[in-house]
Amino acid sequence: MVTLVQLRVIDAVGRHGSVTAAAKELLYTQPSISHQLSRLESQLGAQLVQRVGRGIRLTPAGRLLADRASEIIGRVDSATTELAALVGLNAGRVRLAGFNSVMSSLVPQAATVLARRHPGLELGLTDVHPEEALQQLRSGRADVALIFRYDDTTPEDDSIRLTHLLDDPLYLLTTTGGTALTDHARTPWIAGCERCRSHLVELCEGAGFTPRLSYTTDDMVVMQSLVAAGMGVTTIPGLALRAHRHPAITATRLPVPPRQIYAATYGEPPDPPATAALLAALTEAANA
Image (cartoon, rainbow, N blue to C red; front, top):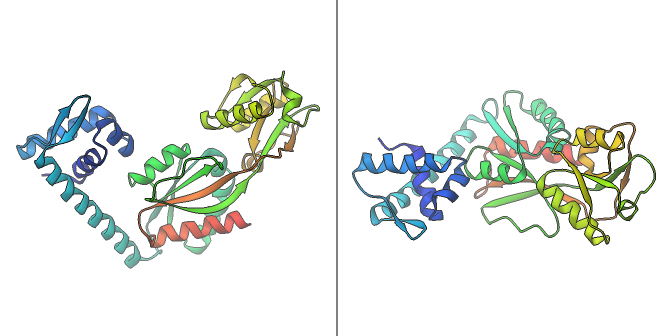
């Protein structure tokens, strides 16, 4: 019997023309995708994909199944939405994927709002980087993804709908003196995640120097502790300071455009009731 997982696999492979891209979207390994395709071909007794150069393409039989898979997946998703509307918000689950600093500051406030308004609704949380959060959203493993964007960030595709929550300013963390980037051209720097790290380098290079990245960590509590210990300086977003602030550091707001924090949802409106309730709670928490 063909499973919904197999239908999602053939649909993703058909849209991307690549096992690698399909695996990335569905959060599977490449061998898992290949195994599902082989098993599906064995079950149906038909060749579904063929290799073309370094890539693959669907055979006529594969294209037929992929087209039907897309229709079936859409109907399943619609049925899930309609069922959520029928059941209402007295029960059920809504899933949120977001990055560390927003999960430790804004999300707990939103969770309190959601629990007060809809006590029967269960909130599932996953702490991941924005790119992974969007992957989970597209693959149906999350209902809302919290992401951040800068002014020069490439826009998301049309399938992603964004709700702006707040602008998050950037701060320079030091212990003694030097409240401008240029004051620390020769100071060791502590860098965060890859995306934040590249943004830090761009800021410093715009100020006329290349920062000497001596330490790297994704943990913003650790970053503050390293600064407090005199091991270097760093930049950190305001949400991270809201969640935790080391008493020994000095935080100076930098005169640079803030990053924008968005709640992302997937597909055509309207959102299912549980998703809409979570968006409303996030918006209330952000405004507060």
